[in-house]
Image 1 (spheres, rainbow over the protein chains, first blue to last red):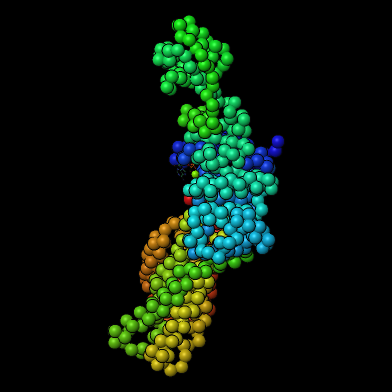
Image 2 (spheres, rainbow over the protein chains, first blue to last red):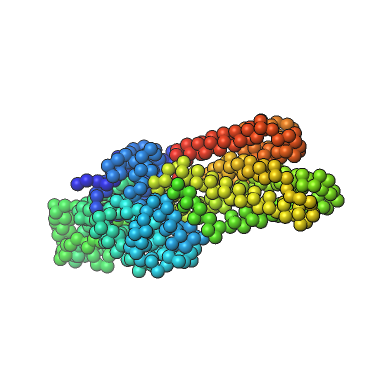
Length: 302
Length: 250
Ligand SMILES: Nc1ncnc2c1ncn2[C@@H]1O[C@H](COP(=O)(O)OP(=O)(O)O)[C@@H](O)[C@H]1O
Ligand SMILES: [Mg+2]
């Protein structure tokens, strides 16, 4: 597999505080890479380093097979579209005037601009000033500005932030279409649900560290779902297992975390039966990606 | 240059145009109204008029005006993520810096034209002076336009760096005031260090006021031109080096 973005030990510290810590990013060409993490986990900082907007304290970045640094960035940035933190756009100008600025800066032809505007479905709004745009329209114009150069790589920082569900769905659908068209997309979010269904690869960040990177299937297999036990005396079972497995009682079901093998499961059941507790149900919790994500980011990781 | 065309597109509906038109009219008129209030006439006709309008204007209002234009041009960049977007594009830093300074310089040039037109109109209509503004002042105006360039480069840098509207304007006010003082005490070499001094010096040319002897010599003109080219080049180069090293701050 070839990677369009590769970083090794990418690190950024501000005044002694490390906010991005030794990232080895691997973004496969043609993927939609969902970059997830709570607010303040270092997503924007990482994306800025990929674009050389800020310089790493340590480590390296390779984009499109070439090192990304201050001497190479201008040449590489012609093939990278980006939208960092909030959508750009000069508020006193119309959408069309903003696109013309991009067109002039990048030396694009009319067809490229038209295509980008149509892709984000903004062709009906181009005569309006950006200050009159809704947030969703600003996001879409920002994406059009990033798209017009027909980038190989698109880096979008929380493009669904502040959008209503319809707006979020529209961006998701747009990302899918772009990926189908061969553009590699890196998209960040602090909400898993916003990128869950579109991302083919996930990178999960917590306090500046990458705690998971891989496909959705990898993620499920990396996390152990809770064990749920139904028995004749749930109260006594809970107190028996409280110490060893942090057992909690939910209605009449006992919930155990961290029971990660068949042997361990059998051991728990044997223990209950030996105490004269009848076990009539043993199952694994149904796990959503959301609960895996929450577990990972709250608990500090794998 | 593509960056230049892009910069000029950003001036549409910009508040800068109001500054460009109103500032010189108000200041030139102010200088002359003060003359009337004082009860001093225009003893030396057009020459006195030029001194009370353009030389007064060149002491500090002109630099402050250029500073306001720079802050206005940069204000749009500092809003939201516009600056990030520009820095995340392929336009080389030097081109961005030159394009910004060029836009501010062009606005400053138009401001100078309006100041001269206002002076001429007030002279002919307001004071009923005979004839027309002596032609050497038109040539000096071209020199003033050139001398606005290093101030534009410096103010563009300050506005880029400070991300504030008022702070770079305050710097221009203090810098121009101090430079005017240096010229008054006869430190002519200040024009090679302070862009504000170079600009003030250009406005005083041929008037025998402050640092000027009244004679327009080739030596003085050459010194002013050299100072402007030197300062503009050095400031733009230094700004580029700093921008290439710095982290984007939004
Ligand atoms: N310029 C800066 N100076 C100091 N700290 C910063 C700077 N930029 C970001 N940080 C800190 O780095 C951490 C990560 O920020 P950020 O990358 O914006 O997180 P995210 O995008 O995941 O919300 C935060 O704690 C933030 O306060
Ligand atoms: Mg962020």
